[in-house]
Length: 404
Ligand code: HEM
Image (cartoon, rainbow, N blue to C red; front, side):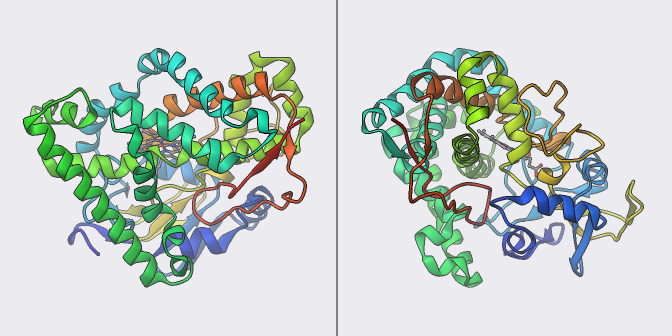
């Protein structure tokens, strides 16, 4: 599927690059090996992988040399907004979207997010165990996200299914794990579900406006123009996959770490004031989004590390390896909740830096606070110590926790 001649095609990046290059369960030692092996790989003609922080930052910060307008083959038929849009149009969309997720808006959500976190914990605390992935990590961020956007929370399962069609197609059809055509067909079906749902909602809101996100987008202007209906669909496509997956993934990585590191967990229990820096350190160490949109060179470029990049090459930068860069972080292999300077790039960098970072941080902090207040001691459930990190963004499938 192609958007047109001005868009660079990318073939099956998830499978070929991310999946094959390293073990998602414990990628940090592999990142170190890859950095020591030069930090730059060209697994095939037209594709390069960057594991060096200085190159990665250069690529992210020079959007005129490296375009994000790429076809990611995720079942979308047009570029996702704002992820696959370059400046200057990108800035216009961010001006519209940033206020929706601004720190002030997140301050107002504090109580609601706390209430929701406790509501999910209430459901299983007496049982003394839970499937953390399914009973908490999936549901909590989705409920907040739908609430924030005014979308129907009683249809959460449908939104999560839409996300799964795109990001976890093997959950919909197990053959999609290995068969590229099945994967593409499941993703295309998921894409259509998203487009159809929001096309109907746009039609409804044109005659019956509410205070939901679609009504707000219909009333909004970008650079003096109204958003087109396609623009709205292309924003919502990205929202469904970005808003419903990343915090869930992060939570499973965080709690898998904490369940296996009682001394770190105890620091949070004894001193909740360290939670903000614990969240930053766990984001750095786990880097749940290991890589972002491939950036395609718009001309021949020489990187700060000296590597030559030919025009048209898709560069896949790795955030996780940039976050264990020894020149940036003292003791990068130590997980230190008292780390003072922590310029991790788990939320990306440059103009496409994460739109939802304030929301994500707020959710992660509240969960660490409320969970450890109510369930200070927990471990991996016996018999479930072997953790599975499936392909895709870093997450733990069926993380089983138990407490006394
Ligand atoms: C801990 C959770 C999260 C992590 C680790 C994360 C990570 C990232 C990263 C690395 C990027 C940059 C991608 C690139 O440049 O290629 C990004 C962009 C983005 N994220 Fe997040 N994200 C998180 C949560 C969220 C949430 C909750 C939302 C919901 C609104 C969100 C929405 C977006 C959007 C819309 C973009 C594209 C921004 C642009 O292109 O200007 N993210 N995120």
